[in-house]
Amino acid sequence: METDPVCGMQVDPDTAAAAWEYEGTVYYFCSVGCLEDFKKDPGAFVGGAKRKEM
Image 1: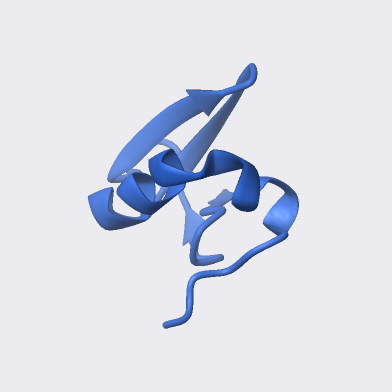
Image 2: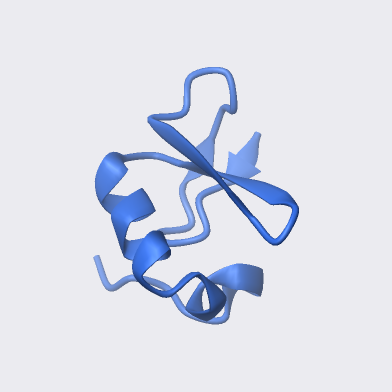
């Protein structure tokens, strides 16, 4: 399992709604919406520095 860097949800890479490579690391997302938030400012989410308010 991987952790969606935007919302913190556990995501199975085999069934993830989306995946995106950033600086050599592939990140997996629970939804396209989380991917879109990540793409706007990936550096804000890498390392869990920022979490989307749910």
